[in-house]
Image 1 (cartoon, helix red, strand yellow):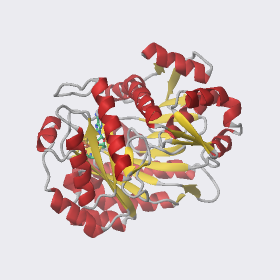
Image 2 (cartoon, rainbow, N blue to C red):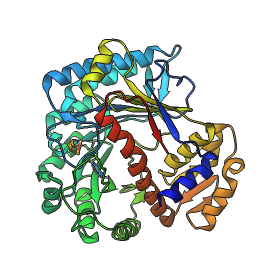
Image 3 (cartoon, rainbow, N blue to C red):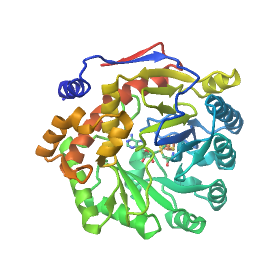
Length: 419
Ligand SMILES: C[S@@+](CC[C@H](N)C(=O)[O-])C[C@H]1O[C@@H](n2cnc3c(N)ncnc32)[C@H](O)[C@@H]1O
Ligand code: SF4
């Protein structure tokens, strides 16, 4: 499969050149005229570390968190001051982690600092660990302007939580506090394709979340990164595929709207996805930035990140300059994550029509029933979404796994080549 996927990439990008990341990057980011840009802030602190988790995280320490806050504010100034003129519009702001609510009392000052340079038009989202859903923290988040939250439930089943090494939480109390605070989107994160999970137990998880006040959920397939530890057997691809089909069928029957590959909304008017932005600026350790022609990633080392900021230097570890075709493929990949591809948006992003660039490929995708053609664009079918999921799994395991594996080992690698 890896040869087939590499060939597909070479065909779509019209080059066999590998992705070559060089060390460091420019302090001046060309985002002044970037359309549809989101903001992302990474908070790496956790109460305890889950062995399966691939993200950049460290145990919470109050002194370290204070130093981290200062570093974050310095990075926002550094990036924000580089672009002159009026404030830049940013569609959204997401706080991810780690467990960002461990710094709940600081979220407001981070938001205020970002607002010196950006106008946030579509709200603020934040990831929460179930243990962080206390009345006091939720209130602090509301006051900071957070309107969408996603809670890392993973599963309501005690035996599944045990497999993941996570404690059971008093969910009724947790949802009571969440409902009292009142957020526009309350999303629950689940992981599927874990041993023992059946469509019945997953349905139960979804319905329990909805019955308690959630209006959205994400159902992530378990991803087995090479640098994390798995304490259970992996489910077969065939079983995973079967479960995914059953989940989609169930949600369609219930009238839940699929708003991205992994996410569903109860009534269609709640959204939570930090992944479906054309472009974004990232702040904090491990944060990535994606602009028209470049991708960059900050160091994963929290101390190294703080040190760089104290020196007034950027913390970029690696940068990739895209060729136009590479950027187009990257765009198609992330846009299809939202299940939809609009011809007008593609043309706005690249100044060329989708049919002139990928007319043959889109016809083929239609013929294979991966997409259906709609007014002004295309929509991924359930079959297409399964292949997307398969490709994404491959992409995650060969690209992200390689990059994050390296970044977990070295604060500033000398280069990275992904073939
Ligand atoms: C940064 S964590 C969420 C926030 C919080 N720290 C927590 O654990 O509840 C983001 C989400 O990624 C998902 N996740 C983490 N590791 C994963 C893996 N190996 N495979 C699939 N999903 C994973 C989990 O659903 C998790 O809730
Ligand atoms: S899953 Fe959440 S709590 Fe666990 S290590 Fe990852 S970020 Fe931290």
